[in-house]
Length: 200
Image (cartoon, rainbow, N blue to C red; front, side, top):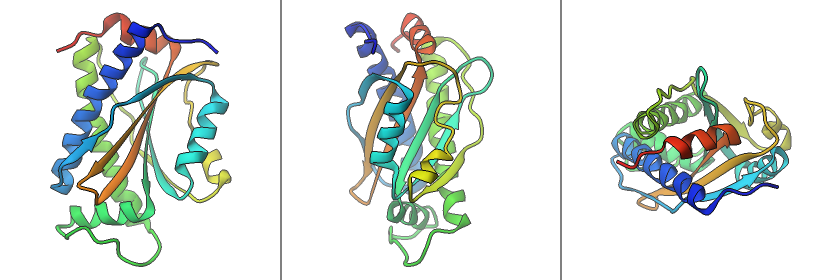
């Protein structure tokens, strides 16, 4: 398994932290709650590692995927536990943040998809500015993950490559909502980001 040079690892962590701060601002706007973000964890992994990570964090959650358009490659996975999805929807509808009883439905999945769309839209604009390359996103895809078979339905790696960089960030909104954002970049894209990254 390859490794990133310490400077490149720091660059990827800084890029992720800046992107995540913009995503957090978008979530704050949607929920009217202050969102705190943990320092990101950066690792070089393979596809089996990613699937294991998704199994560890994703089962019992709604996972929303957004990848990139055109010639920029990567994937982004947002994971909320089921009650957190209900709370987010309640907050977006002007409620106090209550997880209503009952199973998740299409409205919940649509809601969390829009959350991811807003978060990643803000992140993509930020990334565009940092690497001086237009970064655009595809529409979100939400999956209710209850078992390994559901993980297998997620297109975790919509790009080629045996090694990639995974960046995991945790966040919470005033202890009402907790979530995980996972960003995945192939090594070629990682090198491009590190070579072109300009701190603002």
